[in-house]
Length: 243
Image 1: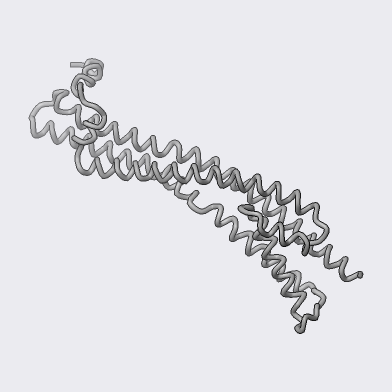
Image 2: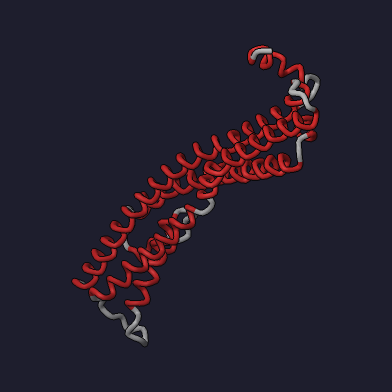
């Protein structure tokens, strides 16, 4: 019997069996592989849905924040409104900078305000950088799991494939024959593992690239806002010093 005939007869060897039947009849090891792949896929899709809406809200709120920030009359008057805007990371950065600024201005004691020198400005810049790094880390959270899924799932599927083929050869050894009825279940089990691995990996790798690009855009916006905020603080301090 040639390979073409074997391929054409393969469906008949597993005829009448649903996908669920083939899975239930597979080995314990194959079921564990499939269970792990299903878990990877479910968690990945949950992360994809959550991150899609999170990044969408962040980008939209960033635009609103910048529009209001550039309309400000003073940092103090804007703080009470802008610092409460969520989920934009700009609010946290602005809040940290303003709190540091207030602590430096009021450091003279008894309510006495002091001028801020270069060292004070450096403290403010450090507060801005520290908070910006924290916000980027928050936005990156769980995205790396998509990369793990994209990298690990094909190999787990391959492991299940190899195991299914090994099962087929083991059956041939037990039965002493290589008929389709003997080898088809093992090969079907192997192909199911392959499909499951690819089904988990393909959406994960697409989503990881998509969210990495979005995160790169948000990080660039954060870097630009850091410079704009620091310039605004120096400008306002310079204006106050001249009064």
